[in-house]
Length: 67
Image 1 (tube, one colour):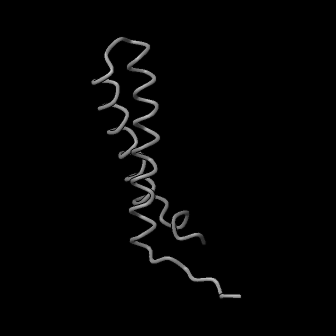
Image 2 (cartoon, one colour):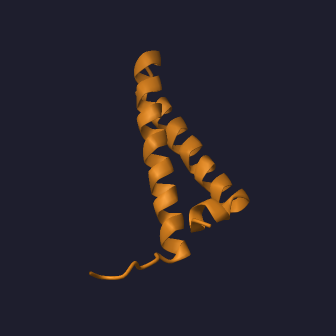
């Protein structure tokens, strides 16, 4: 069997931004569909997701590193 390989920190940061942005987009689409303004909901959701990812990278990098 192969040994475990740890991903570099920058790869985990990119994955964090991608994941939070996509979850934000889904939530934004749902909110936009409920308020009949899908474009605005999508944009707001993506921005909110990216802000959450930025906060994770800046304030809690130990969670991303896996320590």
